[in-house]
Length: 373
Image 1: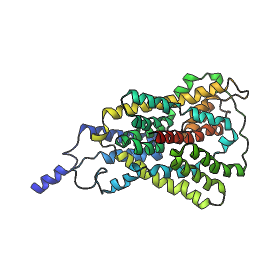
Image 2: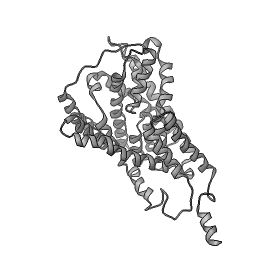
Image 3: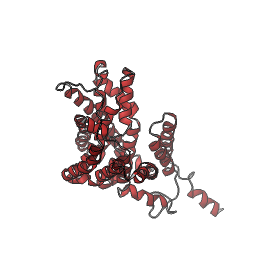
Image 4: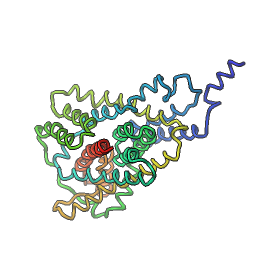
């Protein structure tokens, strides 16, 4: 009987809390949204199941929990804590990314920069909320809609809030189709949303090959804190564009990035143990993340409207919202919004220009914070 009692006490039913029940509901909600609504399923399914995995309670000491030294989950979580999953994700993203749209329409790069406005506004908001400068910087990257960069910076500057920052960043990335359209409609007129832009110009192979090399040299020299992320991003893109490393590029953009995404999503989700995750600070982080994302979206849209005051060839301000780093989700949402206003208006390639610029922009912002603090 003592053996049976000890067995029962070590399991979930004797250790469940209301927090565990709530987090299990959140995990199931993530999985449901990914499957039924197709909201970034490659992210939300691993994260959602990870939340479920991390909130089945047990007696500590069995070396099975994520926070128990030497457990399998703890070893896998080292990639998040030490910050080496995000650069590997960037390698795959680089191999998937086509910078042709940005190189064809270079003036749209500034929209990717303007859409990082939410990062710096949220940094100041974090200090007002009582967070340290380092923690505020880590939280503010959520505004770039860049999950890997958020994890990378949080692992360096705010490891105690790594779980909350990671979940907030990926949650808002997945909710782009819900969050961005109302903001864009609020800030634009129907006439502006109907603007048709000229087709993109073709970009030579030489330019596509030179860009990752010289782009990395320039950005790394100015922002050395972003060397790791941008180095892997541009290296992955060079593998794609060189034309002589197709096997490496195909591996980076398929099996390799898929493996890292599985490990990162599952362990980030499993880090949300209710006793550590459900705190007032986590709530503040989610609120700040929402502000950051809203300001970043608004920043890109408003800067496009400002540019239209000075240029002859008008820019559809919808694509300003694509300046956040979520590739290609933000560009796809911008294209869908434009096509709803005019089914013959195809903005996907134009939207990709600020979108891929936003990937660089959020990494640069993280590099600035890392170098500063």
